[in-house]
Image 1 (tube, one colour):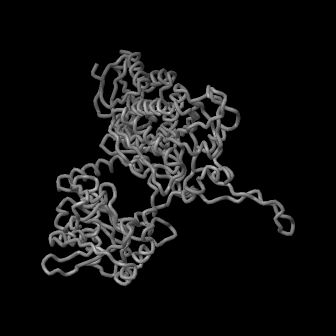
Image 2 (tube, helix red, strand yellow; image 1 turned 90 degrees about the vertical axis):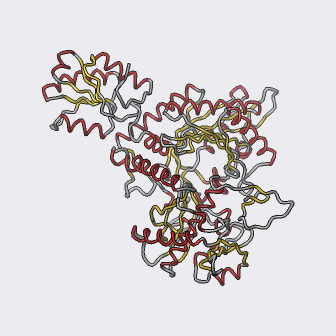
Image 3 (cartoon, rainbow, N blue to C red; image 1 turned 180 degrees about the vertical axis):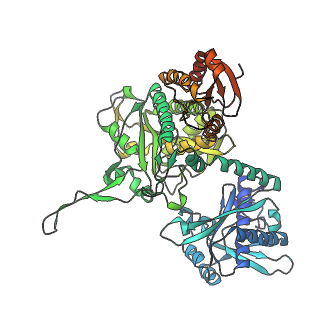
Amino acid sequence: MRVNGELRDLAHQVSDTDEVEPVTITSEDGLNILRHSAAHILAQAVQNINPETKLGIGPPITDGFYYDFDPEESFTPEHLKALEKEMQKIVKQGQRFVRRVVSEDEARTELANEPYKLELIGLKGGADQGSDNENVEVGGAELTIYDNIDPKTGETRWKDLCRGPHLPNTKMIGNGWALTRSAGAYWRGSEKNPMLQRIYGTAWPTKDELRAYQTRLEEAAKRDHRKLGVEMDLFSFPDEIGSGLAVFHPKGGIIRHEIESFMRDELLKNGYEMVNSPHITKGTLFETSQHLNWYKEGMFPAMHLDEVADNDGHVVKQGQDYYLKPMNCPFHNLIFRARARSYRELPLRLAEFGTVYRYEKSGTLSGLTRVRGLTQDDAHIYVTDDQVKDEIKRQLDFVFATLRAYGLDDFYLELSTRDPEKSVGSDEQWEVATETLRAVGVESGLELVDDPGGAAFYGPKISVQARDAIGRTWQLSTVQLDFNQPELFELEYAAADGTRKQPIMIHRALLGSIERFFAILLEHYAGAFPVWLSPQQVVGIPVAEEYGSYLDGVIEQLKLQGVRAEVDHSDDRMPKKIRTHTKAKVPFQLIAGEEDRAAGAVSFRFRDGTQMNGVPVDEAIHRIVRAIQSREQVNTAWTE
């Protein structure tokens, strides 16, 4: 239940004046409590089997949970099977989760053999600002230990440092859970710390929901962009370059080019002006923007340059720190400030495909969805006070139209509001900005979900959450209001009344980053891109070698219209060629034999194996070009 807004165990004592709300197992809070309770049972099972294993952290996560351990040997699939059996025993016993408040000294005494827990005790009260889920242990104002109590004997079977809350007893976890895998993970997410063993699991209210989730996982595994990226020869992460830094191969480069080209065309149509900024800058720029105060841990270390020493090694000219840029916005502020601005120029929309660098922890890197070098389709819009609401609405409409063109059309909105501990600016500015975004979000007619405390340090944001083909949600576009940056950079424009006024700044990232959006599209389409995005759009397959020259003429006509097409003149037999190009997910295979050549026609073979035979060449070219121009998804034979 929630008591006066705070999550509490059902055993918590309430008063007549308390405001109490129920928490159901199917709600977000309920699922988190279920999963966190399952994580505790996993940890108990691990120490039941091997009491010397040291405990790390065990939080709920999206669709499941994990727990970090320091065992004597790495976990194997056989270990996980044994742990599941031990967990089943604990679940059936119906052990009660009992909360107990302890002092720091008491906690240190009870957990003297748990070095990682002892480290967390020192974070009490400050772990809410931690970066790796420490708050599940010690994030509250007081330290608590949860005892697992045998319902028959009253004996404490196991205990763990934990903030809670938990289910009343282990039996309520039911049978909708499973362990999924193990992996290495640095303690508290830092490669400077010891490597622990992490066991992942999932938990749901019912067995049927677990099975549905497992089915989704199987489908997601087939669509994993890292797997498809290798199979389709799209991109790679060479060790020689470094973790989280991708190179795009020719086929991936084509897809990326098409994504960016379409975006550039749409930006220009919608009143944007394209700008460009360098990848590196003096540290003073990020001192002005406050990124060095608020974002330094996410930046690559400084490069100290320009220092000059004499022959004796004495410094005669002081150097200065340069940084790889993690954000484009400070550069755009300098472009705005480069000359006097008038209200007649506003809204001023500056857009850039700007590559930025962020020092993400190695344990968080994940294919193209979490990288250290990324290209943002970034835009910053400078407006007057009375233009804010209309411009935000315009930006959201632009976002929806653009994402639909890429084939994503199932959205909802999320409103991220202020974290008082991690923000700059006045209460009034934040209130005005937040309510403006809320009003636009409500007017859009889409579902609007609150994200308390999720805003960046400089202003609230509204984000577009898009669901993909298998129902997963991805945060894509963001629109953020910023009263702070214009003040820090002393941005001004000449108002209609002759006075100097400060513009309001809107941060807008439509795709988020090209890399991440590439991965999302690759998984959404399972590699079978719409024709306009497909790296190879048409392949000609002659029934026999003698029909190759005929198909060469057809393919040449397509190339003249900008179609990415070629004839397969390899020595493979026709059935193998068809299998090869079907596996490569080419949208159109054009097959020609004697009847086709005699009739001036070709036969289509589509990705799902359907065919259209004897299509006149002119009609075939028209259909292919139309499918590209209309950004059509073609997997099966046309019906008209």
